[in-house]
Image (tube, rainbow, N blue to C red; front, side):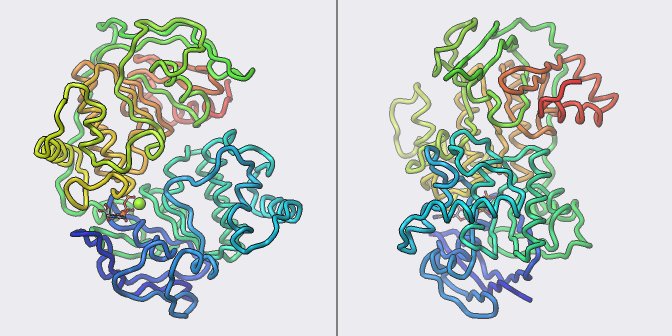
Length: 494
Ligand SMILES: Nc1ncnc2c1ncn2[C@@H]1O[C@H](COP(=O)(O)OP(=O)(O)OP(=O)(O)O)[C@@H](O)[C@H]1O
Ligand SMILES: [Mg+2]
């Protein structure tokens, strides 16, 4: 049965036609993937289905009935739930509080924690979510926070789950668990709409896939006929391939240490956050740090850029002024109310006057070099699509031209073409002589860019693969290297 039918949906923002006459249906109890390049219109379409945006044209049918959503409460009443591209949890509340917040109040009930606790505990058990309802949310890892978001949807009895890029933040191991949960949902009769940029995930999990390009539905196919290379051609279109810039093999030893970190430790509230780290950043080199999020990566950055001074150990030179792409683009990356070039202006100390044409030129330069798509010139960053916001942050930090660059998940949420562009830019910065720290949970990314690779677990470098070792293992036995790294990320040392 068709549980959702979208007929001739169009939505315009200024001059941009974000959705252009899209007709698409979702079968009940299936996992349906929606894919497409950054700015293709995926989130917009899903926000229309969830009642956040109102379509300019077109009709929506849920379980065969025509609906006219005034807001997302109307969608929630029809058992539609949406997990947004960015988390919406209150960090100082417990899981239980976060889950019932809004759901109970909106119905005008008196809060009944004990009743809710029973329901929530049962949901956690039924869907194998492995969460403690009384845990405070700020203590959770990213993948646990995501499970809380799912729990919120389940608690509201959602039958149709819209998941906007939930997998972008997960490591390969967490991804397995996540897919298991999705399959549990399916076994219980739920319908899932999943947005992702990772085509092997589409192949693995979906029953059906739809491809959007520039606001239009351009292709649909069923599970059996999914062909990854065909999909990637459809997403990107016929644009010429981007040549991968080669890493110049610099032999490493030639370069002096740029930054030296000795015996760096950090203890906060009695918890060891960083444990005796020793490493050097060299010119012309990428120091990769690989780990499940929340294992000390953010604390290390805070210490390196001088935000946290309570550490023990030594860092030379003491004053670092790096460019930095933070892990959380909405909270730490940019000011949403400002345009791309105004955001650049804030960071660039040498620019004194923000004349309109200077700003416009900066924007044009960014857009061209990093393939950013903006609805109109001078558009506030908050109106860019998720992936385009990410590209804008990376562009800004690279253009600042600092000698040290810190990238935290630089390609999170960007499409395949932008991923190539960003990788090329990182290599090119390295080749120019910059020292780069690359934090990521994407193993392919780390292995193709890093000159040295440290695996961090609970604040400790369990292993640092030096340049020669990494090079040799990548050439001789990539698979066992991947396995080895995967185990180390989970704290398994053999
Ligand atoms: N509120 C808004 N105001 C103006 N333009 C908007 C608004 N929301 C989205 N857009 C524009 O509509 C287009 C489609 O954006 P959308 O967020 O749907 O893309 P997406 O396919 O989800 O991309 P991504 O993969 O980067 O998340 C983009 O050009 C975006 O800038
Ligand atoms: Mg989106």
